[in-house]
Image (tube, rainbow, N blue to C red; front, side):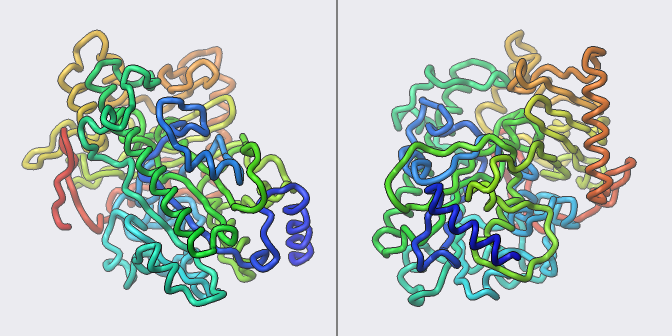
Length: 486
């Protein structure tokens, strides 16, 4: 029966012009996974942003599908990347749920599976990270062997399929000051997110961020050129995504949209260019792992939480998910409580109309303690840089006061945002009687999911998560980061 479904899928591929593999690659295509670092939706021209130029993403879109509602499982590098590798929600990964956590070697990853299936698997730059994989039973990064893409392709045995993870460090901080203007980005034309103060210092910081998105796009072009030169372009499925959102207050390390909603484009060069196909249904990036295994025609599968995107990509389905569930535990070591181990546990449900967030330890500061004695940590769950410095220094200014509170201050146990009126998640409606029924229904759906998923945070539990040790350590300061043992 599974073979019949795959055969029907292959026929539909050609019929709909979606990922129409040539005959020799219909079963086991190459896969190039291009993963950005801290890249938020909608910062690409394919999503309507006209401030920056991303022509290579445009080119990919003309040969594939653009997803408009893709979300990372957790807005934090290590658990997000671990979730993609395993197809599991972060809370199902034990100590892997935290930044710099420990991903047990016994938990199956698609890297391990594809290698057993005969794929050559490697990565460049940032794979599973940050963390020390040597402390968890791995002799190589969980993303595979480290390699440069062009030599990897050149040495590939003829006829052997590959999976390559290209993990850029863009657009992660630190940025080069002034790069935005140098690259031709006009800070005054940027559509600034409403959770950031509209001042020149912050516009310049965002312009520098966008210049790194443009650099990321140029590297996509270089990867495409390498594939073409090697005669592998039409045999390769290309997936472009991000691990989490932009490194600004109210974004990264938060379950708001600018922390969790990310770009996702899946393409293959076959046939003529066409208008980008867009899909607005919800995707959690844990769905990539079973998708990769489907493309590789893997028969024996581990249990996963992700749902393959192949039915969407082949036209058998038009709706993938109607909602996504999101989570966060400890990001940085930035609270004095529990010997710096205290995180800020959250869970959320995001639907087309609403975002409902549960903060399980509202007595803690979500941005981290403003200071910790004998450490350089300063609001350690907000990346250091010009925006952070400006908002801290001007926190009592009329223009900044409310936005500073949204990004740095304590929050109530429940948050509810009505998205058609509040796309930046600024106005919490959890205490408004008009939405009491909506809040109750969303709370119940979240509770049901946590129970079904055996989430350790259900019923007020999960304190053991705060005691998990980090494999590496660092302090986030006002302006940057200080590593302790790397």
